[in-house]
Image (cartoon, rainbow, N blue to C red; front, side, top):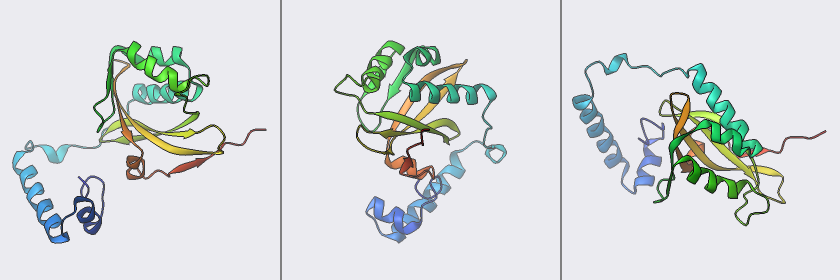
Length: 184
């Protein structure tokens, strides 16, 4: 994954895995061979799927709802049985109400769990729509990378949000911070 999916150099991959470069290269060759043996015969015909207009619209509305802290709009986007997970943490929320209760506290300036103002940058992860979340904490002037939400969309609704930690934003080629927008 580090080499072929994320495009990381052998030296960096070896360092992350705490193994030698030769061992990392050997593991990569074995993994490639295993995939060749086990993947479907027509895998060479697979292409990166283009975002449907519906997915693009949902991502745009998700960004707008989150940046505005608009829980009514977020409610419209989530399926009733949506799931929110946060690997590697053993935390998940099942159902639209549970997700909204979790999110509401981070959007509410009166809440002790308030994060600050949000901006989101659309991206994609493993051919799925995703958004990188940046937060401007109270008293600061920049938006710092905070999370990566990978969205699974079915029948016009978000049915699953997998929220990853900050370090994966760089793997999408996105910056660690965004400037604060200028206001007239």
